[in-house]
Image (tube, rainbow over all chains, first blue to last red; front, side, top):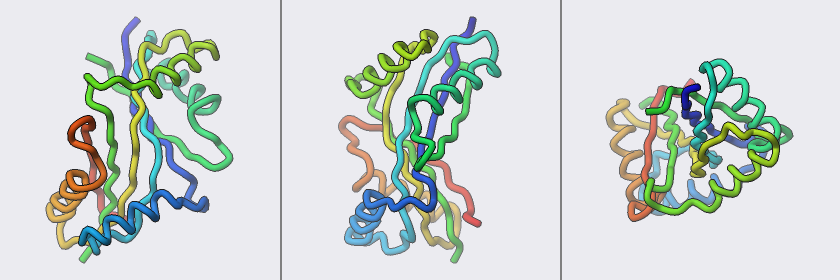
Length: 85
Length: 85
């Protein structure tokens, strides 16, 4: 068994309103970052899992995202897996 | 001017306690994902900025992270920049 590190990004789907992102954009504009067009806020998680192969780790992390980490009605998820040091 | 997309991950520094991550790990264990060793929770942001070059976009996003997005006392940040479609 090896240890793998999954870096999971969870975002609101593009059609879902994101008041937190709008607030951050407003704050960046007031600080002088006028070049900011849009901000979308989301969640990030680093998950360390034991698995025999990267493929097995990927399948299990996908299942975690579907069952607990993301709300499939309003959120999308995306992750990368690497062997942990 | 082009538009660039920065994908920013903000995490707690390794020495900072992360009760949210511990709670998520507990929930994953109760759902049968016993292979999960640790979970660290953080924030994710997608920022669209106008800039002349990728280097300029990178410099500006670094400044945004330092001034507003991350708390340098307890958080680390990391980002990737790509040209937006």
